[in-house]
Image 1 (cartoon, helix red, strand yellow):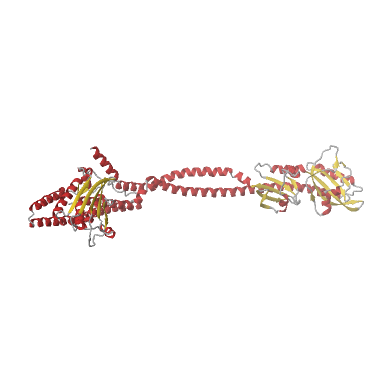
Image 2: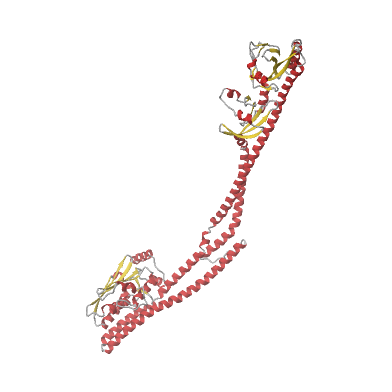
Length: 639
């Protein structure tokens, strides 16, 4: 009866424990917020999609880049093959002219008596090819001019033997030699005009008065024809260009020929002259480029095509735009697809999560069991888990109720029989001693004790009633012990109207008498004090008895199964347990004692104003927080 409020407190703690079990079991489901689930799915799909798009875009770009390079290289090779054929045709025609002059004119006539026939033959050949020729001349091995066409006077002492075309012809007699472009400076035609020519020279056998001698046949080709053919293929503005050089790397034609000759520019023609026909990668002046080499027949000339890598990059601009637009369109499509897929995947899970959240919020909805097979199985498992938890909760509550009831009944049984036995023993002793007035006084005080002890079945009473109970008890004990000790109550009246657990002072006073001052001769003193400190009510019961050691004090409230000695007893453990059951573990008893100095037992309980409402709340086991106690106290003062 006394400890019914403690049972309510333990029931509340049991419900909290069960709630912790539920929160632990479903904690992971709580983390699955609707937006988080869908965002996670969309993020995962987006990462995969973007990765595939990037890989696809990079592969496409590099594939197109390789194809573009191959295409540009192949088109360049075809253009160079065509240009090479044109050059070969032109140079071949010049070679044919040289052969015609040699075999049809020079070999068929004697210089001594047929010089007019030689001149006529050279004139016919010149007139037939004058668009491609500048001059035809025959020199003996000493460099003297024997015949020339068109007719023009030779400049004074040109000393042709020092010129490259003459030295090449005399040095390798079996070959024809094509010179690099140079200005013709052999003849004076009276116009003071100078022409760029390429000289085709060869050693010929001359007949003079029937004797054979060596000479040099010179055919000067018009350089503008070769320049025109090269300009026709150098029309691109993307950095790609073509040039012509001889087998020694000497430039025959170049777009920047003037700059190169003046030392302003340069070209890697020396290395290109050593290349065989084909495609090469090289780095020139810090720039990477492809070089395509094609050899011109009969001459050893090299037609060189140069393609800077920037040309490939420039050619990929449109492809980059195409890939970017394609990836943008794919990204837009993937956004829509991601949305649809993520919604389809996450919708059943979100519905399941929402039904679980509603269930945990206190509602009783049906757990969602739709969607794919896995989601249905999960919903079915959660539903069964909830049912099992509900069954388990009921079993735990019933089990805890029974256990706490048995525990509190056991505590109750320790107090009442013990006190009744002592009180009735005292009354019996007085009656036997014919102390009727004292017995009547004892019985009246005992009646007051039982009235407060019963308290209509309540565990929580006012401080005023608890003090009345303690005073009645001490009145009985003083009569029993023949006033062998004194008792003083020093309690602040302002705490009378606060709540307390009943029967907390009596067991402490009983221990103070039995183990503290009972063996003293008229010098025992017991003092009961009460005050309000920091929103708590502090009771203290102090005696000047024999006291206890520190070891004994430390074991009083922790070891209830040991044999009790001086200053200890089961009543103190009982009081401490009942206070903590009703108000919480932070409240209870504190014992201070010194051997031969006495003992002080302090009681700490929260300051809750005594009202009918607060009493019922505490009886149900509800524990007020510190803020609620301050609020309750303020409301009590306002009333």
